[in-house]
Amino acid sequence: MDPPFDHDFVGQFFQTYKLKEEIVLVFSTITVDLACHACAPYLSFFEFVKLEDGWNLKIYDIAAYKAGSWGKPPDLRIKVIGEEKYAVVMEYGDMAQGWTVTITSIHARVGDSFKEIFNLLTGQGYPEGNGWTGLISIIPTTMGFHDIEVRREGVPGPENLMFLDSANDFKADVADYDGKVRASDTFKFDGQRYRRESPISSYR
Image (cartoon, rainbow, N blue to C red; front, top):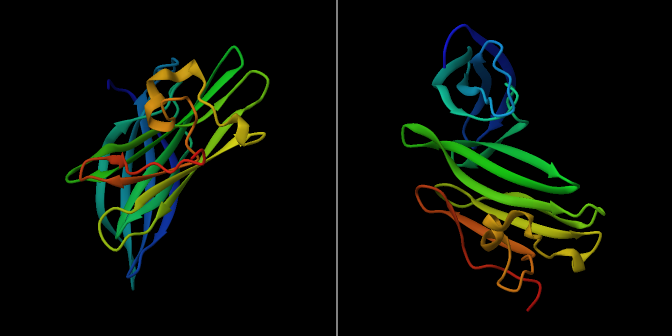
């Protein structure tokens, strides 16, 4: 990344854990006037913990990773992903000739650095408007990183829970061998990233 730099404030996110409150400030940085489709800014994170007399900077990650396009960061959310752990959830959408795909990516601090710990196709659509969508939920566990559950619904009905060939690289992650998209999956953290556990299918 070459100077001069363009710094933007992305947002502030409050997190409540069992024993404390925190706030995460997010900033983006990119070279000035760099705004092509593939030009993604770097994201930086500053984590503050609430004390009796104010807020104290706990940890920060400068230029943790790149995300976005046209020089702008993607829409993102901060979620509690474990005991005193937070994650950055981002959704990417793409459209070509009426076909749509949605991909959800999750980054979190693992060890001393941020890394992608989850990446999944969470929606497909036909030009006619049919398709399917996936809803991600965080399922609390007693220790470590929480589980992730993905529940999928056909649009407009369950008969549309079929994989579309527009994104074959993701097929094994969401569909069975016959092309039927699974109604639900659970993912567990293996120390490096989330892996799918036993699939739950509504077509048994």
